Image (cartoon, rainbow, N blue to C red; front, side):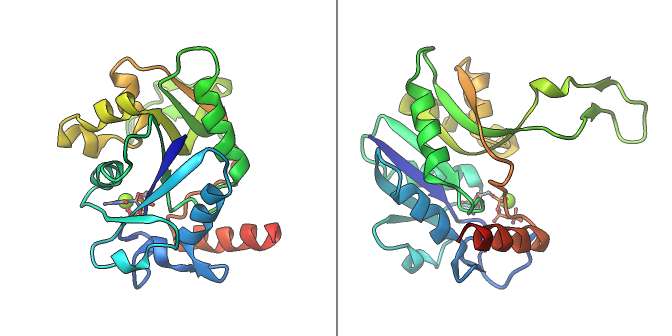
Length: 220
Ligand code: CTP
Ligand code: MG
């Protein structure tokens, strides 16, 4: 059995809403509730821990364990992990991805246990743009081979020891890490990608919020 850690403690500065992003109304309910429902509908998840913004602990969805998040995302993951009991598998998910489905969640959990000695399995969509590496204002150094590139999302599923080791990196490294799995990779862990739909979008800007509402309405 796995425990889900949902990080919802960000301020949502780029969205520019009144309150925290995870609690912004989206298709009729707080954004956070969409992810929690998908996780609750996934077999194999025994508990859902939600890291909430300080002062919003009372907004924990029914049936979840609420904890107070930290100043950085990694601090919020750590706070949630501390309330996860002794689960051997942890699933980390951003509340900012409300299009999560039970199917994708189940695929990530199953991928961790397939042969290969995996330490982590992360949802990711194939990249559709051509990606070039270039210092700003200078000549392009490289055009990357697109067929090998993935745009990484959450959920990200981890063996407990791998996630604990990742979160034990110095704060500066944690702050610079754009996902949890890259720290596992740096520690020599085996991370695999699980093909996900590009519509598992992250809500960052007001445009994303509009798109998420349309996608959720289409689903209903
Ligand atoms: N998060 C968190 N604790 C933090 C920072 C972020 O739990 N201290 C969570 C967010 O709630 C979100 C996820 O991490 O679900 C991804 O972060 P991001 O999309 O950057 O959300 P915000 O930090 O809220 O947005 P912004 O960076 O625009 O302020
Ligand atoms: Mg942020």
